[in-house]
Length: 369
Length: 152
Image 1 (cartoon, one colour):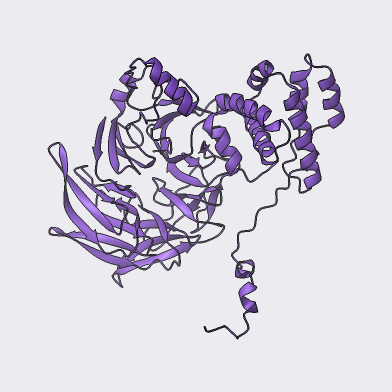
Image 2: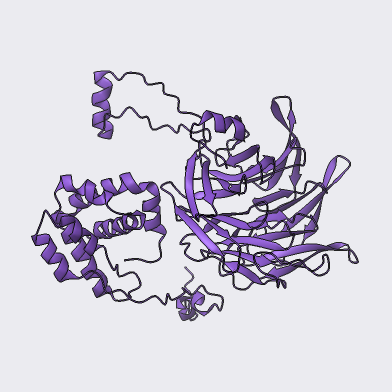
């Protein structure tokens, strides 16, 4: 497990380039910093200054090498590399509240931006006018969109929102692509059609993720639950109420296993069994506890009893790798089907890279199916 | 200094009420549940300690979640509080263990509701129940009490 502390401020969002040698992140201000891996450390190579408000979402398209950023200034910029410098192109999103998240589609010909204006802007490039145009998905969203994820078919988009629902929309743009083939989520997919809407979730949906095949979608919400829905005639929803603090981000690492992390500062594994229809907690993925139990003197014991009403030796220090909430998780190697490495960034300004094989061998009983 | 002599009654208007995009809570069409049956619970409490756990389960049945009637909610809260107070400290843990995860969440809701209006000895008893329920449900059960829009 490699941990690098970038800054003292929280990392609002991050994105990796195709070969994972560069990371673009926002240090909780209006800029985007790009760091390049040199040996064992990271050096800052570029600072992208264009936004007038905090940058809330960054996504780096691996094939076309373009970065899209969105921020609280209600704008999004698409950055292209010209020589050594990143040049921004403004995209008019036509929103009147902050943008919250942005994701390139798998074919990188469009991207979606979720915002506080209760709508999703799906933007595509119009060749004739040489600029980015956007279409809005409004109904039936009733509150801020917090997270987005694209289906591998480049058409369906999962969105988690503050109105306690996770929905799958069709973001089919006839100008840039052909009619899609039917999927387990439905066959008629006009733009803006709701293919699936979740029920039973009682908190804001912080993180959403499609599996590699696109047949399953998982979401984590603020009522400390994680749920998985399987597409079909009638979508089957399985949810798990966890005993931990709410989770903020979730991703599939195989077709049946999810890793999610949040306010508890450590990633946790969840296993979904499609046949039995169960979602179970698989284990805490974190550095093993340092059991440096020094003996307590009698004086210390009395002091503890006086101050904290307990003679427990546990100190009030977080034993996890991250020292504050984890806000984003991204796959580094292996894709969502056979993930080998994933990365987490959080409010402590640090980034941790987790190796799945090492975790599997370090924690006994950990089975990643 | 300058005093505003122009009419300012418009400042008292709540503009959010007129916003057509205002978030309107979905009305759950589920049937209204009347709350636990007082008579049955009373009977079972009298047969303490044998029927204590049964009284406990009966009291947690039919929570008045979708009810708009505050009287029903008050009554349900009073019944549950009576059952919780009638338990001996050593019996609390096995009773909590007999609940499933939905039951633990519901118990936590009643405990927090009880904290809101403390009476003679209620807080001490509720704290004992809170401790045992927390040991099983963890922070997640408390988060679910705080975020749930369906209040008992």
